[in-house]
Length: 300
Ligand SMILES: C=C(O[C@@H]1C=C(C(=O)O)C=C[C@H]1O)C(=O)O
Image 1 (cartoon, rainbow, N blue to C red):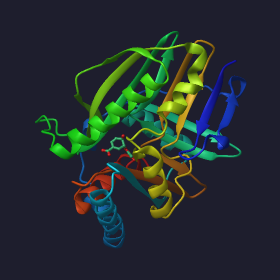
Image 2 (cartoon, rainbow, N blue to C red):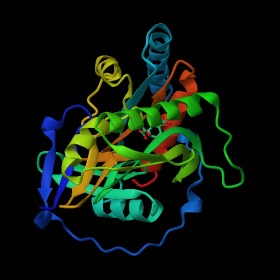
Image 3 (cartoon, rainbow, N blue to C red):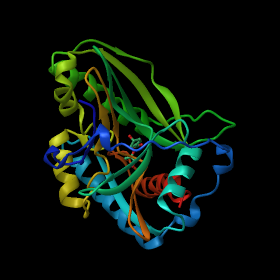
């Protein structure tokens, strides 16, 4: 059976499924002009929110320095007035981010979500599983390759090691890693390692459980980071940093729900976050969320 799946950050009981008969086909013509989007995101800075978020980062850094927790991914949500219809926003999203995994999900229990995620949780084809470790963020500069700092290199490696270890713990063999690369995602770049493995296709859900949520969106160790997020973030992430996918008999594609928004009648809630380690600078972490906010805000 073919179905779509949409899952929350926290627990899989709230997963929703859409049978394939309910899919709607959408034809669109790409009229992309992405380079025009290298605009300044500073107009999205909100001093009060900056103070609140930077304080939360500071508290997290203090905790990381004193404990065995290595990384926590913090996030926040901001609401904006919609100036276009949902389909106009979807068309803008598809035009703006042709290389991303763009989706629009509408379900009575979930409402409407839309996004352009750069992050694969797992693409399964027969006995092959493809996943990635994606972390570290900088603004894309077409004239210069980004030189990554120690903080980003370390936080991305934590994600890679977690993925490899958790797949191994599920008995997965032949795990192959690419070199660490800089990958562009719209106006941003991230550090990325592609990971491939040989799997038993009848155990798809088992692997997803082992991977989700990775330290790219949660932290390390996973349970301690997830508890810290729940106790300190101060809002419900809902489906943000959950995953969405299309599952078929021998193939399945699951993506991490990032660079996304929840659409209401007149408003859109935009969700953004970033990985915090003991080396994080609170103001830079806030600015990173502003850059990520811009990827969706520019479509509204
Ligand atoms: C959490 C987000 O992105 C994740 C966190 C990143 C980081 O900490 O640098 C980079 C890519 C994603 O894995 C987000 O976009 O909201």
